[in-house]
Image (tube, rainbow, N blue to C red):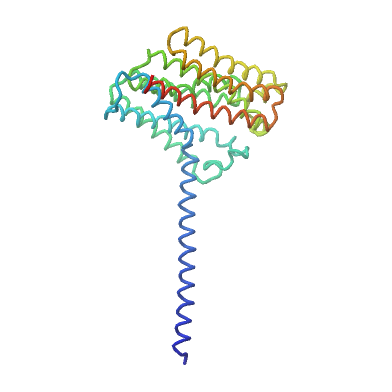
Length: 319
């Protein structure tokens, strides 16, 4: 018969074992929750979605006559987001096979087998339909047509073209700049000069950005049959043409916007400084487009985009 001391010791040991088991269960549960959130983030491309929404909101603010958000405006924004998320999901459905061939994309939910391709296709189509119906219900036919046109250009044109031609780059640049016009459309501000300046800058920004990514993952793109410029033209000439065209286009847009009266000299100075900020890593990239310089240019283009949106937001609220 055990004495009270032994009983107490056994109780303490049992409680310790139970606590450790509960801790393991909590850790496993927490890990599963974190993993689920990570899968959702990858599936919905949350970072890209955030930048798109930020761009639309900034464009809407630039084009709006008065500050403020009403229920109708918020409903149209939600509908647009539905169309955009639908396009993002359908893009992954179409590219699931090529994504499986590239290490950088093979862990995405569909190619990794964590989300069924058929289920994703239904979800993408449903979100697109609900978004389009929401815009139609708002009575804004022009924005509905524009939203579906952007969807079609991304899903039906750009995505298949990635395996056919290097023209995917300018087509993708139009798609990438489309959120500016969608945002302006929320407040019927298509005519506002600053909106067109922002649209053009984001259009040209994507050339050096896309070429940095193309060189960074050139071998993977080639393996998947995606004809980015370095794959379509291994000599590098086409890649350099696209990169230089983007950089020159950025500054020409600034100059043209000043002449047009879309931006003031102070803003033009800031945007010119941004072009100079991109010039140094671009020159290094053009001279030697290796992994290091490609990654450096990629980082600089992302910083440039953030600063670009910030400059236009400050211009709207304090200019």
